[in-house]
Amino acid sequence: MRGRIHSLESMGLMDGPGIRFVVFLQGCNLRCSYCHNPDTWERQGGILMEPLELMKEISRYRPYFDASDGGVTFSGGEPLLQPEFLLEMLQLCREAGIHTALDTAGAGIGHYGEILSLTDLVILDLKHCSNAGYQEVTGVGMEAIRPFLQALRQSSAAVWIRHVVVPGLTDTPEHILALQELIQTLTRVEKIELIPYHDLGEHKYAQMGLKYKLAGTEPPSEEQIKFLQELLSF
Image (cartoon, rainbow, N blue to C red):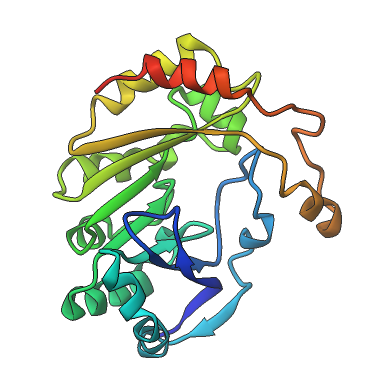
Protein backbone atom coordinates (compact mmCIF):
# COMPACT_ATOMS: atom_id res chain seq x y z
CA MET A 1 0.00 0.00 0.00
CA ARG A 2 1.24 3.46 -0.87
CA GLY A 3 -0.22 6.91 -0.31
CA ARG A 4 0.04 9.98 -2.48
CA ILE A 5 1.79 12.74 -0.55
CA HIS A 6 1.74 16.37 -1.63
CA SER A 7 4.31 17.57 0.91
CA LEU A 8 5.63 17.18 4.46
CA GLU A 9 6.18 19.83 7.11
CA SER A 10 8.42 18.88 10.02
CA MET A 11 7.76 21.79 12.40
CA GLY A 12 4.12 22.84 12.01
CA LEU A 13 2.86 25.27 14.65
CA MET A 14 -0.72 25.91 13.42
CA ASP A 15 -1.98 22.37 12.92
CA GLY A 16 -2.93 21.17 16.38
CA PRO A 17 -1.40 21.31 19.87
CA GLY A 18 2.36 21.64 20.21
CA ILE A 19 4.82 21.18 17.38
CA ARG A 20 3.35 19.01 14.62
CA PHE A 21 4.76 16.86 11.86
CA VAL A 22 2.24 17.61 9.11
CA VAL A 23 1.50 15.18 6.29
CA PHE A 24 -0.29 16.89 3.39
CA LEU A 25 -2.06 14.18 1.40
CA GLN A 26 -2.74 14.72 -2.29
CA GLY A 27 -6.23 15.07 -3.74
CA CYS A 28 -9.40 17.05 -3.01
CA ASN A 29 -12.96 16.87 -4.35
CA LEU A 30 -13.85 20.42 -3.26
CA ARG A 31 -13.06 23.52 -5.28
CA CYS A 32 -13.21 26.20 -2.62
CA SER A 33 -13.26 29.75 -3.91
CA TYR A 34 -10.49 30.78 -1.54
CA CYS A 35 -8.31 27.64 -1.72
CA HIS A 36 -4.64 28.62 -1.54
CA ASN A 37 -3.33 25.19 -2.55
CA PRO A 38 -4.94 24.27 -5.90
CA ASP A 39 -1.87 22.13 -6.55
CA THR A 40 -3.29 19.64 -4.03
CA TRP A 41 -6.51 19.03 -6.02
CA GLU A 42 -5.34 16.43 -8.54
CA ARG A 43 -5.76 12.99 -6.98
CA GLN A 44 -3.08 11.37 -9.15
CA GLY A 45 -0.41 13.93 -8.26
CA GLY A 46 2.11 13.97 -5.46
CA ILE A 47 4.77 11.43 -4.58
CA LEU A 48 4.11 7.83 -3.54
CA MET A 49 5.18 6.66 -0.08
CA GLU A 50 4.66 3.43 1.84
CA PRO A 51 3.38 3.67 5.44
CA LEU A 52 6.60 2.42 7.04
CA GLU A 53 8.63 4.75 4.84
CA LEU A 54 6.59 7.72 6.02
CA MET A 55 6.70 6.50 9.61
CA LYS A 56 10.50 6.42 9.44
CA GLU A 57 10.49 10.06 8.33
CA ILE A 58 8.08 11.00 11.14
CA SER A 59 10.27 9.25 13.73
CA ARG A 60 13.23 11.46 12.85
CA TYR A 61 11.38 14.45 14.27
CA ARG A 62 9.75 12.77 17.25
CA PRO A 63 12.08 14.34 19.86
CA TYR A 64 10.88 17.78 18.75
CA PHE A 65 7.13 17.16 18.80
CA ASP A 66 7.25 14.96 21.90
CA ALA A 67 9.01 17.73 23.82
CA SER A 68 6.13 20.11 23.05
CA ASP A 69 3.25 17.65 23.60
CA GLY A 70 2.71 17.73 19.85
CA GLY A 71 2.27 14.94 17.35
CA VAL A 72 1.34 14.20 13.75
CA THR A 73 -1.35 15.97 11.72
CA PHE A 74 -2.79 14.52 8.52
CA SER A 75 -3.98 17.29 6.23
CA GLY A 76 -4.41 17.89 2.52
CA GLY A 77 -5.90 18.30 0.07
CA GLU A 78 -8.48 16.11 1.73
CA PRO A 79 -6.90 13.25 3.70
CA LEU A 80 -10.20 11.33 3.80
CA LEU A 81 -9.85 10.60 0.07
CA GLN A 82 -7.11 8.08 0.91
CA PRO A 83 -8.84 6.17 3.74
CA GLU A 84 -6.88 2.92 3.59
CA PHE A 85 -3.51 4.67 3.71
CA LEU A 86 -4.76 7.06 6.38
CA LEU A 87 -5.99 4.17 8.51
CA GLU A 88 -2.65 2.43 8.27
CA MET A 89 -0.79 5.58 9.30
CA LEU A 90 -3.17 6.29 12.19
CA GLN A 91 -2.74 2.72 13.42
CA LEU A 92 1.06 2.99 13.29
CA CYS A 93 0.93 6.28 15.20
CA ARG A 94 -1.43 4.80 17.81
CA GLU A 95 0.91 1.84 18.32
CA ALA A 96 3.83 4.24 18.72
CA GLY A 97 1.95 6.41 21.22
CA ILE A 98 1.93 9.47 18.96
CA HIS A 99 -0.89 12.03 19.24
CA THR A 100 -2.80 12.32 15.95
CA ALA A 101 -4.83 15.12 14.43
CA LEU A 102 -6.94 15.02 11.28
CA ASP A 103 -7.29 18.35 9.44
CA THR A 104 -10.28 17.81 7.17
CA ALA A 105 -13.35 19.30 5.51
CA GLY A 106 -15.11 15.97 6.00
CA ALA A 107 -15.59 15.36 2.27
CA GLY A 108 -14.15 11.88 1.92
CA ILE A 109 -15.20 8.45 0.70
CA GLY A 110 -15.99 6.53 3.86
CA HIS A 111 -14.40 4.39 6.61
CA TYR A 112 -15.15 7.31 8.93
CA GLY A 113 -15.88 5.31 12.06
CA GLU A 114 -12.61 3.37 11.82
CA ILE A 115 -10.62 6.51 11.06
CA LEU A 116 -12.12 8.48 13.94
CA SER A 117 -11.54 5.63 16.38
CA LEU A 118 -7.80 6.12 15.81
CA THR A 119 -7.84 9.94 15.76
CA ASP A 120 -7.22 12.03 18.87
CA LEU A 121 -8.23 15.41 17.43
CA VAL A 122 -10.31 16.46 14.44
CA ILE A 123 -9.65 19.94 13.06
CA LEU A 124 -12.83 20.43 11.04
CA ASP A 125 -12.88 23.10 8.35
CA LEU A 126 -16.55 24.02 8.06
CA LYS A 127 -16.96 25.82 4.74
CA HIS A 128 -20.56 26.99 5.20
CA CYS A 129 -23.70 26.10 7.13
CA SER A 130 -26.36 26.10 4.39
CA ASN A 131 -26.59 23.88 1.35
CA ALA A 132 -26.75 26.82 -1.07
CA GLY A 133 -23.83 28.55 0.61
CA TYR A 134 -21.76 25.38 0.68
CA GLN A 135 -22.42 24.91 -3.02
CA GLU A 136 -21.35 28.47 -3.76
CA VAL A 137 -18.12 28.21 -1.76
CA THR A 138 -17.01 24.67 -2.69
CA GLY A 139 -18.87 23.64 -5.83
CA VAL A 140 -20.72 20.80 -4.06
CA GLY A 141 -23.63 20.61 -1.62
CA MET A 142 -23.56 19.70 2.04
CA GLU A 143 -24.45 16.09 1.26
CA ALA A 144 -20.70 15.67 0.72
CA ILE A 145 -20.01 16.12 4.45
CA ARG A 146 -23.14 14.92 6.25
CA PRO A 147 -21.95 11.27 6.64
CA PHE A 148 -18.71 12.48 8.23
CA LEU A 149 -20.53 14.87 10.57
CA GLN A 150 -22.75 12.01 11.74
CA ALA A 151 -19.75 9.77 12.36
CA LEU A 152 -18.02 12.60 14.20
CA ARG A 153 -20.98 13.00 16.56
CA GLN A 154 -20.64 9.33 17.50
CA SER A 155 -16.87 9.38 17.98
CA SER A 156 -14.74 10.19 21.03
CA ALA A 157 -12.32 12.48 19.17
CA ALA A 158 -11.86 16.04 20.37
CA VAL A 159 -12.95 18.68 17.84
CA TRP A 160 -11.58 22.06 16.80
CA ILE A 161 -13.64 24.07 14.32
CA ARG A 162 -12.13 26.39 11.72
CA HIS A 163 -14.11 28.64 9.41
CA VAL A 164 -12.80 31.06 6.79
CA VAL A 165 -14.40 34.50 6.83
CA VAL A 166 -14.74 35.68 3.22
CA PRO A 167 -16.22 39.13 2.48
CA GLY A 168 -19.51 38.70 0.64
CA LEU A 169 -19.72 34.96 1.38
CA THR A 170 -19.30 34.21 5.09
CA ASP A 171 -18.87 37.52 6.87
CA THR A 172 -22.29 38.54 8.20
CA PRO A 173 -23.45 38.21 11.82
CA GLU A 174 -26.48 36.24 10.61
CA HIS A 175 -24.21 33.72 8.91
CA ILE A 176 -21.99 33.34 11.99
CA LEU A 177 -25.01 32.72 14.24
CA ALA A 178 -26.33 30.11 11.80
CA LEU A 179 -22.88 28.53 11.78
CA GLN A 180 -23.00 28.38 15.56
CA GLU A 181 -26.28 26.46 15.38
CA LEU A 182 -24.62 23.82 13.21
CA ILE A 183 -21.62 23.61 15.51
CA GLN A 184 -23.92 23.07 18.49
CA THR A 185 -25.10 19.80 16.91
CA LEU A 186 -21.57 18.45 17.29
CA THR A 187 -19.98 17.13 20.49
CA ARG A 188 -16.60 17.55 22.22
CA VAL A 189 -15.96 20.89 20.49
CA GLU A 190 -13.02 22.49 22.31
CA LYS A 191 -12.29 25.50 20.09
CA ILE A 192 -13.86 27.58 17.32
CA GLU A 193 -11.53 29.71 15.24
CA LEU A 194 -12.45 32.21 12.54
CA ILE A 195 -9.76 32.49 9.86
CA PRO A 196 -9.59 35.73 7.82
CA TYR A 197 -9.58 35.21 4.07
CA HIS A 198 -6.29 35.96 2.31
CA ASP A 199 -5.19 35.86 -1.31
CA LEU A 200 -1.62 34.57 -0.79
CA GLY A 201 -2.22 31.60 -3.09
CA GLU A 202 -3.65 33.60 -5.99
CA HIS A 203 -0.40 33.45 -7.97
CA LYS A 204 -0.67 29.64 -8.13
CA TYR A 205 -3.87 29.92 -10.17
CA ALA A 206 -2.13 31.97 -12.82
CA GLN A 207 0.74 29.49 -12.91
CA MET A 208 -1.72 26.60 -13.36
CA GLY A 209 -3.89 28.43 -15.93
CA LEU A 210 -6.87 28.56 -13.56
CA LYS A 211 -9.30 31.40 -12.89
CA TYR A 212 -9.18 32.79 -9.37
CA LYS A 213 -12.80 33.37 -8.38
CA LEU A 214 -12.14 35.91 -5.63
CA ALA A 215 -9.80 38.22 -7.52
CA GLY A 216 -10.01 41.72 -6.06
CA THR A 217 -11.58 40.59 -2.77
CA GLU A 218 -10.08 42.42 0.20
CA PRO A 219 -9.37 40.48 3.44
CA PRO A 220 -11.64 41.29 6.40
CA SER A 221 -10.29 43.65 9.04
CA GLU A 222 -9.00 42.53 12.42
CA GLU A 223 -11.88 44.42 14.02
CA GLN A 224 -14.46 42.53 11.96
CA ILE A 225 -12.92 39.15 12.82
CA LYS A 226 -12.88 40.08 16.50
CA PHE A 227 -16.53 41.16 16.36
CA LEU A 228 -17.65 37.95 14.64
CA GLN A 229 -15.54 35.81 16.98
CA GLU A 230 -17.25 37.39 19.97
CA LEU A 231 -20.65 36.35 18.57
CA LEU A 232 -19.64 32.70 18.87
CA SER A 233 -20.25 30.92 22.16
CA PHE A 234 -20.30 27.24 23.02
